[in-house]
Length: 60
Image (tube, rainbow, N blue to C red; front, top):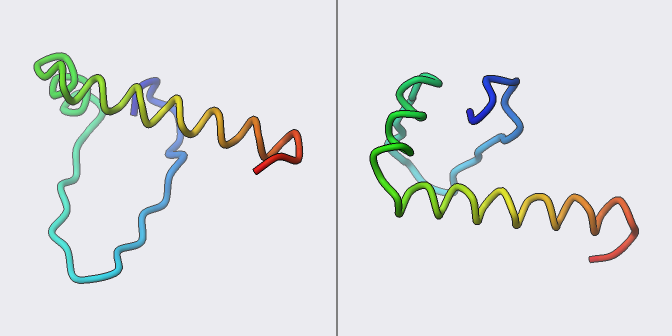
């Protein structure tokens, strides 16, 4: 969503859920308008990058 590339996540819910579908522009506008959301998105990206790096180097 940040760079208009292909999706890099798949979501599976464990119970019935209501989901929100957003376009790239809607996501960008939401992040620009909400600092707390931006911080959460950046934190999630950092966690994912660290996990990917650990997996590629054979660590947990």
